[in-house]
Length: 447
Image 1: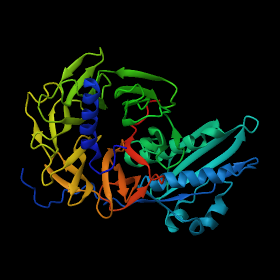
Image 2: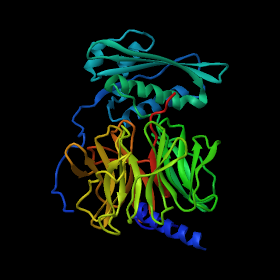
Image 3: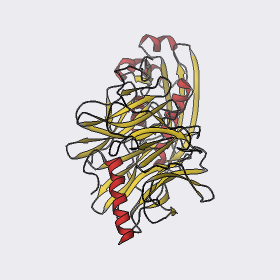
Image 4: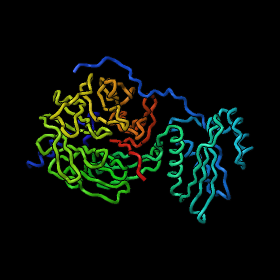
């Protein structure tokens, strides 16, 4: 009901402020630049994934399904280029029941890395055992071996975990196959929070509030989601665990309690309150004490923390009413200290999202009659478009490895979520309901 235009992030807050208050009473443009958004200059590793060797009987064909999941995970990571099976079919047959690896022959068919897996059913058919082995054909060496035992319900999670281990071997950084995306789904009673895995599977509903929910935000340990809910007839700040079983009200003042953002150390929450007859950015500390960061007669909203917790980027129309821009301020002194504007060349910029690596900020920018995602580089002080083409793209959120951005794309009257790698013009559609909003990519989970 509130999200009829692409200006939802900033104007939604304005509409909500007016609604709450009524209830209570009753720069110059930068030239075109190229900042090299981590262009895909590194060649992908050519990977051969052999058929899983089944020890015993696999009546339900789980081994084949597991191989498909693994292949998709590694393809979606965009670090690997899997070889098609016919290329190495004969070689695979020769080594099927042997632990020996003919590195020279694998190199001849084009494989740089090889994955071999043994699968067996355990626990009276209720579980499975998977033994993975990763080999480097180029350097003729064994790289990694992992054995997992799990229930059948945890098959996907097990495969995702090994896929992330493979990425770790190549890059030194965890893969993102185990990550999830929280987002809002338009329902008849309002908007509810859903979770979906990075690969587009395992869609599940978290909230059942039957009301308008806004701005889901993850805790740094990936165990909680904070959001604004109208369930108690006031825009309150709520925290819920990923199972949807534990729920508590974090902050409830008359008026807005909105746009939450957890500090990296989980000791504070940046949020927007309208207690001053205007929206301002505050910090809610671990003792539930409030500290005001912005003091301006125009709207201040959408805070996002730098990874070191020292800075906060936010949206404000302090440069002109109805013309929001992106600013950076100190996370302790707020706008009483220096405030730096980073967005130029557009009369509307909103939804800042600080990258996990700390060197970039993604945000929504109006480009002519559409909205697109821009990336600001904090080292070069230049911005570059990530998205283009048909439809409006907005509400960016970063993957925890800093290589991908998920955003909401509007095409006609349909809203879906898309994932795009920095430096790539291609995007992968994640949701297809036409009702997806406000994506938030989970951090790495802390096991």
